[in-house]
Each structure stands twice: as structure tokens, then as C-alpha cells.
Length: 118
Image (cartoon, helix red, strand yellow):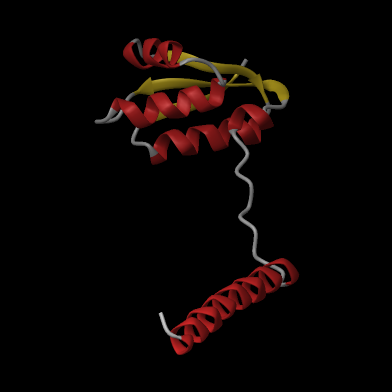
């Protein structure tokens, strides 16, 4: 390599390092939008007199099983058992607004559920 090629190489590396440093500085000083943290149902369960009963599973069992797993915070085996044997009580002793949210989530997944008062 001759002298001019070395100069071009060094200038290129310095530009790359400089731009990287500028991007890092901009990213740390600029207020970046943060994703809203998703809270799972089992983190928001409040004590109450309501429960949720699964009446009918939709065409696909997978999304319903994942939702049951999210509500219970348990293992997939329990969710599979509840999906295979409807009507089944998913959760009891929760507040009415949470029970209604869970019923709406089941409806989004194509399943039919109801909130009931104990």
C-alpha cells in the first residue's frame, strides 16, 4: 500500500468511529419512546366474588390454552386439561372488572366464556 491508500484507510476508520460515537451520544441523550410493559392477567388478579368459566373452545385450541396459561400462571398441562373438558372453571375469587377482561380476551381468541358470581 502506498501513502495515499493509508491516509484514505485511516480517514475512513476515523469517520466510522466518529459516526458511531455520534449515534451513541444521540441515542443516550435523546428521549426514546419506550414500549408499554404488558402486564399479564395473573399479575393483576384482585380478590373478589367473581370467577370465569370456559364454556366452549373455538376452532383452534392453542390460543385458548395460551390464554389460560397466562391467567393461571401455571403449566401448559393444566391449560390443556381445562380446554379438553369444558365447561371448566378457569379462575375464581377475582374482581368483576378483571373477570370481564378475561371473558373479553377469550372472545378475542374465538372461545366462549362467562363471568359468574360465587
